[in-house]
Image 1 (tube, helix red, strand yellow):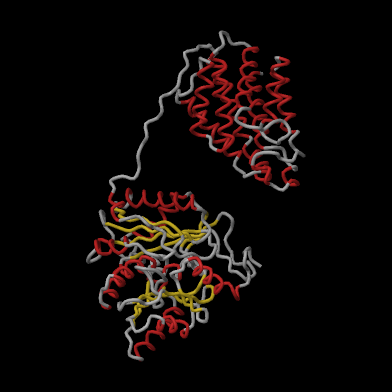
Image 2: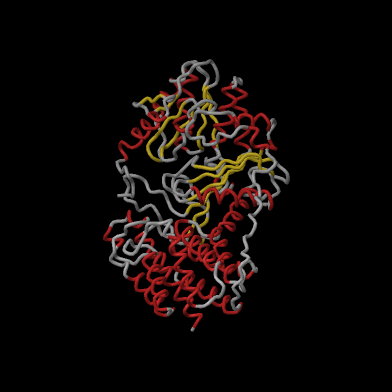
Length: 573
């Protein structure tokens, strides 16, 4: 049994279509044949598509104004029957019908039968087959040909605009065919899709392996490799798409300064933050390495493979088309299709630049001067940062069990940022007030989350407390730490016993104030951190975790404080 909320494949597709139509009231559903459509209102060319399910939002998600008029859904990864397709065509009334399908044998046959039936009955119908996959080269494809992938969505959008604008049947078909002729797509995936109702044994890839050219139905790709860094993966994929010297895969001509449409498709399980980063890496290489001009960029779930952990890159070469401006105008038309996620107006794409650089805030410097030894300060900062960097796996482990898993990496990133700032002379090493003030500034920019705010406030308050001091000694430092802690407590209700960083910070400050012994303060800090094991979290995200899990480990934030002060102690030894 796979890892699915709904594992009953027998009712999944119809239930999903009903949910889609409930959420989009302009859609109508023929529940007998699983046909999703908008009711014909004008005499014009109507577009019909469909195929196996599991690729949502394709194809029912593209039913709407200026896109498809009808989509017919088969079972997961299986073509719908000819009778179901015929029902979809009949729903279009006596309008001419252009069918657009993936280049898969089942789709061509079943939709083709519907075309023949409609023409035999005196209607007008034809079919355009999309075969944008370049991973299947000429030798491998043979007479079967290439597969249809995410580029199909661009065919829907452009042909849909042409149809809705009232173009004649021959013109709409020609427009669709011209898009197909200039489309290339290639994908890569870290896993095979898990099919609801199956045994869940589909994945045959190793943990560190990625498959180049995997199909959207788990069909084998042409190469399995060790997963490379993202920029190297993109370089490999773009070579498959654009290398004009590859006689087996150079299906579409590209040359410098050609205008292209870029579409980045999520196969289902890639997070949005990764997908948009992937988009930028692709765009950078397309423009800098291949000298192409990207005029439209689309990113999202367009043609998925259930929960496949992968992505595909599609390029449409507008410069090869007879009227690229017309094609762009159709892409820019608004649509009610729920699967099309770009609502940008045409004018927005013509902006010279979508990125701005803000001027940095002026760096705050105190007039107060408390001289400190530069070499010692450098050593203390480095030791504290290294302690947190080395503790990252341990802190991450604790936070993964009893939090959101980011504490270790957040502290490591902040430590690296502080070390880099020291290296670039952005942190003063001779004036104690500026040391802590500069560190607060670095943390404010580099350390996110609740922890980042707490650390920044504490160090800024520490600098402010020292600014009113005349001399710097152990008593002054202890008083300043106590004052900084008091300021911090005005922003958080956390205290000892809540399983937070305060379980370590409060004992450290109190012990240092009472004993003037840094070693005793470090021990109290560590004991406070370790005491959080067995506690039920009172505040923070750990408070949402099952108590038995949270109590099995110490608090990650408290352990971070303990590691930091232990690092300082090592530098003083």
